[in-house]
Length: 257
Image (cartoon, helix red, strand yellow):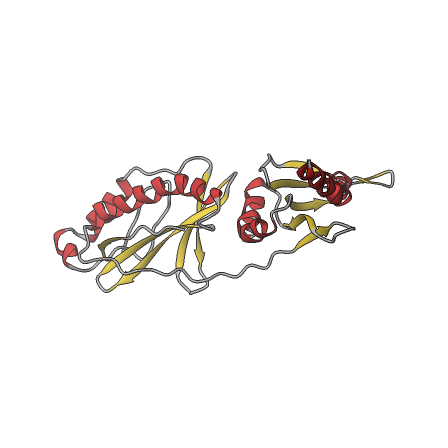
């Protein structure tokens, strides 16, 4: 996560209509005396701004009761958010990237989100005016997530050989990435082949079970998401379980030579 702090004079309650310009209302402070509300609103609406076609933004209510503007990527899932926090006659703009700092995907999300949020912050400051003083540190509220997963141990030594992460509402790669992000620390801890399994569709033909899900392998090497049936995925799990101790035995033999 990173936070980029900027101050601008008390701006609008919130950002308005991404992709259609930036709109503000409810100004006060010294800057208000230099520029009328109508002039600032007109300047905001005439300011050109658009998101990349693969990025979307929606207003969300956060656990601490504040409003945030959450950015999503069609392939990478949630990127992060912008918060606008009131501070007297000024507003503090906080930009956050979601994800564990040690997760390589966090840096990838940052590389997409940071130019967008910087552009927004600069446009807001240009319209509302430069703020005074140093920004106050912002500590993001802790968010708890409950994600169902299952590990598969070796039948001989009982060591964990693989893990499945279940994402029952995920029918796109972006949503699968959301679950991968939330489970990063556990995936890193176990360090075994891991897959995120999305929404399962019921598909039975002539009594044959053809259920399928969008599946994303995330560890040890990330692969492209693809449609898989349960038997195909479980064959991979069974192979890892059945060959675990065989591989360990071969490794010990090689070490002795």
